[in-house]
Structures are given as structure tokens and as C-alpha cells.
Length: 157
Image (cartoon, rainbow, N blue to C red; front, side, top):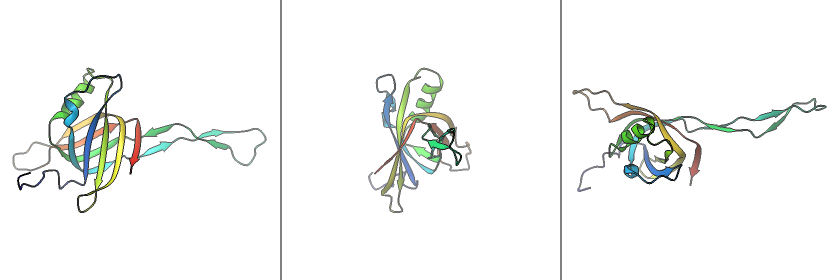
């Protein structure tokens, strides 16, 4: 980078997106989405057990595996290398890309800046985009919050 520091280096989480259209759609201009964020919340999956009450079984009900749901992931105080994130949000919310989803990789960095843990969100779509307040005297980062709904969470080793 010609002796200049990478603008994403202060962030503890780096993100990258890859194309994952549900309806077999073609790749778009969104292939260069990547950036960094200072905070990430909502990496969780919850399994709702199915309770089966059997006649004659008086010591508790049987528990079976039920449906899994995923929380909305919230990325806060970040910066991207391009404006493609807004284009993706606009495509999804304006109905032009109903089936267009992206796979989102969230890489947690250690103190030396090396990748420590990678989480992958499958079939992700943006549900909220909030930019930083515009203030001529401030030096805030470009994206205050990005909320992402998804259909699968995977820990990659």
C-alpha cells in the first residue's frame, strides 16, 4: 500500500461478502464488498425444543430437536472500501433483487491483526443501514450500524 497504513487496520472485525443468489441470478457489482467494523453482536442460534407429553410417562416430558432460529447480526462503527453495501441494501429493499443474497464472512482478528475466528452467515440480506452522523468537526467512521438477517450460521476453522 505504498507505505500508507490500511484504513481498515484499527477494526477488530473484518467482513467480506460473496455472491449467493437464491434464484440462480447472475453476479453483480457487489463482488468487491469488504470492510471492517469495531463491534459485532448477534452471532447466535437458538433451537426451540419440541416437548412431547406421553401417556403413562409421569416423570417429565420427552424433548426432541425443534426448529432453529438465528438472531439478527448487528455490525457497528465500520468502514468499507466501496459504496457497494448501500447498493446492495437499495437493491434488496426496492424489490429488484428479491432473491439476491450474499454470504457474509466475519473474521475476528487477534491483537496482532491475524485472523483468529471466522463466522459465516448464509443467505444474508441487509435489514437496516445507518450511516454516521454528518458533522464537519467530527471524524467518525462511515457506517454506524448494519443489521443483517440470515438463514444459517457456521463457524469455519
